Figure 1 (cartoon, rainbow, N blue to C red):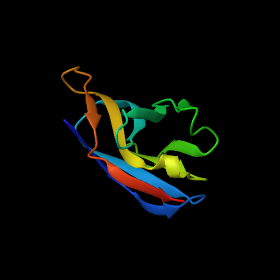
Figure 2 (cartoon, rainbow, N blue to C red):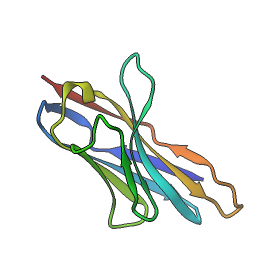
Figure 3 (cartoon, helix red, strand yellow):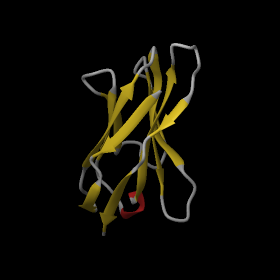
Length: 120
């Protein structure tokens, strides 16, 4: 099993920056992809950014050029650097990963979410 814990959310003014972090704990053979999703009130959860174990990244069009996903210094952490924040970035942000376990299962794990609020 893998447990994910996010940190770094908060309240920021438009144009500001925040860095979200996700830390994984548990037992696994490998973490294959690490993602950030967000869900605004009344909207569906959407993919914001993803990074593979090989370092390949992809972003939603709405955040390209403003957000950057990166792996941390340890293999069990990753970050979302958010710059030039806009009020429409306000949402609960969730980290997610796909992992390979010792029983060869490849489940998906979610964190509990962290609130990001951008004031105008």
